[in-house]
Amino acid sequence: MIERTPVLNILTHFILAVGFILLFLPLWIAFVAATHTIQAVNSAPVELWPGNQLWVNMQEAWVKSDFGQKFVNTLIVAVAVVIGKITIAAITAFGIVFFNHRLRMVIFWLIFITLMLPLEVRIVPTYAVAANALLPFQKLMDWTGLTWLIESASGIRVAMEWNLLNSYTGLILPLIATATGTFLYRQFFLTIPDELVEAAKMDGSGPLRFLWDILIPLSRTNIAALATIMFVYAWNQYLWPLLVITDRANYGLVVVELRTLVPDSLTTGGGTPTWHLAMAATLMIMIPPILVVIFMQRWFVRGLINTDK
Amino acid sequence: MRRAYFKNNWIAALVVAPQLIIIFVFFYWPASQAIYWSLTLEQPWGGGNTWVGLENFRTVLSDPVYWSSIRVSIIFALASTALAMGMAMILALFADRQLTGYRLYRVGMIWPYAIAAPAVGLAFRFVFNPNAGLFSFINTIAPETWNPTLNGTQALIMVIIAGAWKLVSYNFIFFLAALQSIPRSLTEAAAMDGAGVLRRMRDVQLPLLAPTFFFILVINITDSFTDSFGIVDTLTGGGPARATDLMVYKIYSDGFRGFDYSGAATQSVILMGLVIALTFIQFRYVERRVHYT
Image 1 (tube, rainbow over the protein chains, first blue to last red):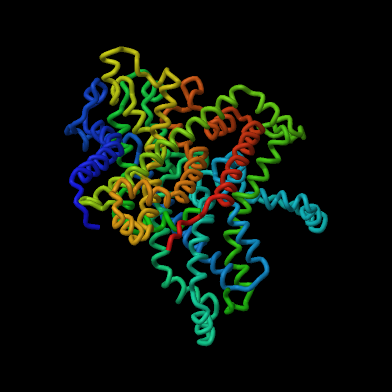
Image 2: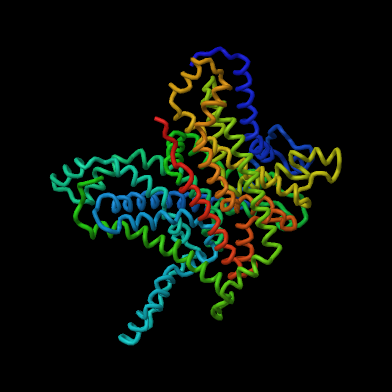
């Protein structure tokens, strides 16, 4: 719209600039802290201009927290969660939309309700499951008398155990169920015209072939949008890895490492707080998801708006 | 409604099975266990459960420490939501004018969303550090004025600011998308009638934002009840003297540090009820999408 509002334009720029600075300032201060020596960082007033120690601090933080293995682990977990979520969302939605069975709505609601059970509210029992992922099945068999039946028939007592603690599976598997992703895919599949399904059937294509050769290529935009938000989600996981992984040297993730970087009396033993290292490490941990959001901004925004509840 | 289907239902069973198994094992089973544990008293190192009915709830709800945790959680949820929504709405309204530099402003508002909650917590811990952070100058002028590691109110303010900071980007994205889905013809008609920019914001754009506003309100409150764990853990660790011990953090510390499984499960069930109620409100009373055209 063409309007001449010079005063208001200045005000607009002013408000946006203030907002930008408010959002940027905390990170700027963290960044500046990462570029100074321990003495400069711990002296008031706070430094507002970067020093020349960034590379040194980053190297020291990297070695101190043993980030090499942990970055590799985080990347493995994030990529696996992204692939797992997209796969499971696509196939579940496919099973709900393109087949005519009575359980469609039941399955849909079962997945839907999981939205109301975020990890934080079921954390203690979920941890018990992680110690033995087959426990629910064992309990079900015990209750239904199946264990007793098998034991009296064959003399073998069924005791199933699958420990997920300290493993990639334990980090990945509980995170790949996705109600939001399933909905996004369901919405998309509902827009596929019947004619396409009929044409595929006439050409002799079975359901799996239809999924792989027609639906997946058509859903590229969905995949891009989901992948960006799921990557950020998976990279930033904190509470779950914190509990499942005790062997931090081999299976530790970088985000969980933030907890050990808090320079309080416990970690520094009364010495000068190592803020310069904590901030350097924090910066390194933040960078990958920030890059994804900035460079995949279009997909990211689309994914966020389409999936969220 | 769809008419063309595939006939082989066993393939349907095969493709929905993985997700159903995962949600059974990691969602429904633990949730039902939480309810079971909340009604029984469990010994942490085995020894079986004894049925105690609602005794756990009575214990938890008669504990003043738990009520203070509820109070802190509610203050945190309301304050950080109000702060984040207010700021995001103002920024979105002005960014939507799409003046020069619009794209730059937009990226500048969106990127904080990418930062993990514990990273936000740790960065703000330094920013608010009484000896070396942004506010350390206050202490050089008037010693011992600013110290969130000792002063509970200041610690809570710090957690609220960090929580709000993390939510602004998310809200901004949704407000901006909603503003951009308002048909141009509406704003143009208002302009023809002589409404200036601010008048249009007040009388055209703001009322049309109402559905998005309520949607974000519920999401933000739910989020601040559950997702605040990471921020509290690295920023204050629940202290000082439990001043920032949010409900979700208390579940963690009671369950995994105190090994009070029944107590933690009871608190989980209460929080679960809260989240379910909020989600219900969202779907029952709040429009899910903004459709104007």
